[in-house]
Length: 112
Image (tube, rainbow, N blue to C red; front, side, top):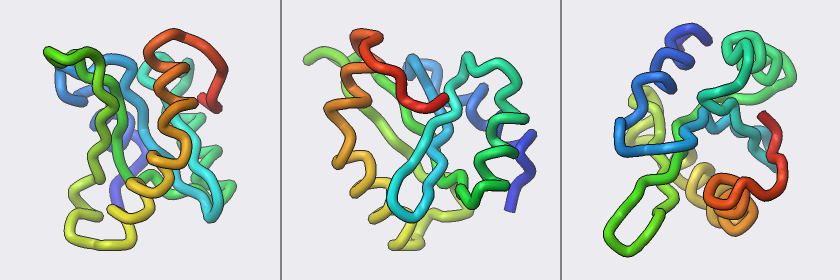
């Protein structure tokens, strides 16, 4: 398991074509984000982990020919583990419209 500093560094090195990148922190019945512009991102991630969250991947918006596309990637240490992919896929699909509204139009305020 990587340190919070390493996870924040992974966020800062998210694919350059992604905008509004964030670490996806999974909980039992929800997930939260630590966005790239979060003041004290390391402290915020540590707090979420202390509350039982698990940083499982990155999410962001990629500009594509057809418009903006929501992207997500599981961290390498969870690659090949079905629970992580199912978790991030299910959770992302469940709130995709909300997140898309926030990331694309700046509407709403998901936890940062």
